Image 1 (cartoon, helix red, strand yellow):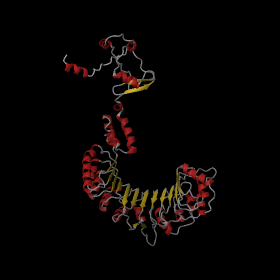
Image 2: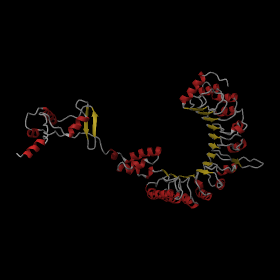
Image 3: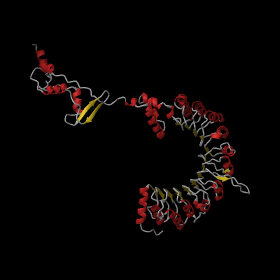
Image 4: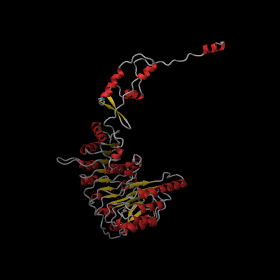
Length: 537
């Protein structure tokens, strides 16, 4: 051998020799390794294999066949010493795993009847709305897609451009993009639509409502919130194409009064609910109502917009009673309301015999008096809710003369207006003695009744032997002169009391002047009042 070759041979590192498998150990496959990892022998678990999943179940495993038992015993026997090639040839093959007799059904979603799926989806839609649930459910499988595509589930929809509130060009582009999708959705999904809400539509209101008139004949409710560009032709077209449309909400939208009047002239006989925002054009709409174009109207709400209108609203009470005799809910919210003078000789109107809710609440003092309230409610025996927050000129005597006997909610709170007014100090007992059997909510916050008068008023809720407990569950005494003994008495007499507001009550000890929510907090207040020392104030 040449010297150079010998030198390179000496420098070459020794070749690694693969270690042979110990004699008597069988080669294990990947399937055997996973089997032992997931369900080791003696762990009390066994594997159940299916087409699309592998389950680890407790309890004894499935019974093995006779061939499997023999193969297991054969693998436990030691292999005699032999060469590597002989050991590889003698290595026994793993026994085939038999398919289980029973396993999970991978297509359980397709086996549910379509009628059952529709009922389940209907319950979810009723609680959470159709979107985004129906859109996600349609991607599960073909059966779910078929169920989610049923127009009967798409009965309530709210549509708002995704770029609302940004630049005008971006908003218009987003509205056109959504409108292109609605051209397919309206005939294919919204054919049984009943309630539609449009929010922040600035330029494409007319095309959307045109699609609705062509594809949604069952529409009953339409709400336009912060929408512009509603023309008379659009609303008249909708009134003619949707014979079941009976509710219209156009609060906080720029809609011409001529458009609303034209709509009411077309759909007035079937109109039941109407929501308006007070502006300079509201007079024309109210004139149509006073003329009797909506004899079946049951809900009328007029509220102020973001920019409050300081012009008082003069509403002829008797004319409204004649034009809307079926009215059940009347709300004049946060606006300066003046009943139109009836002349020297006061002729009582027909009243509202079906009225159940009257709300004249406002953030500032209004001019509603006992005389105006009597003109409104002189023939309303079924009144259940009376909200007079901010009406500082209403006295307990005027409320006591009302014909309703089963009033459930009475709100007389004064918020930020009592400092400039002379408030009544007596007469609160006239309210509780008349309605203590039915009152569930009572709000006297900010009123100036004396300690003794409040004690006499709240004593009406005391339980008499043999009588049932009062129904009172909410009591607001914020800023009043109620005493600790009076509060303790009313809590003990009303076990169903869930809300109690004692903020800024000057006669109560410190630490207890706050709002209590829930029965536990109310009972804690009672315990503190019973254990605290009497206050010097």
